[in-house]
Image (cartoon, rainbow, N blue to C red; front, side):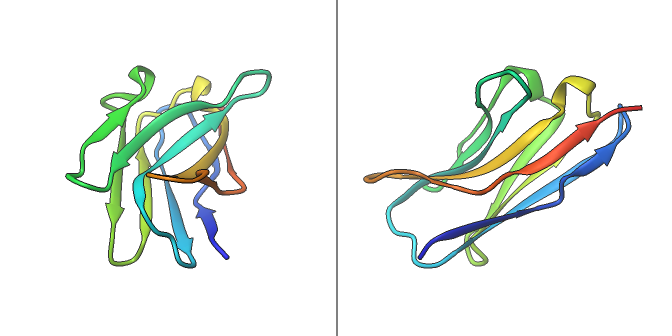
Length: 117
């Protein structure tokens, strides 16, 4: 059974930093990409950042470019998201995602990030 376990959410002031980590447990095959999505209250889930497993190419939402950095450790099967210069509009539940070449993606349960003064 595959499980994505997220950690690192919490409360931070505007301009602050937080790091999120996701560990993929279980046997996952044919992984195409790992990444993070988020869903703010009253909004749809949106892509934040993904990293393609073959070649390491990264894709970021325009709203987080230059502030967030995604990284992956293939040996540990983890994907991390370093978030700097956080803004109030970054407040959301952040979800870890594993996209496969074939089959449905895997999702974590989510971790709440609150940016507030």
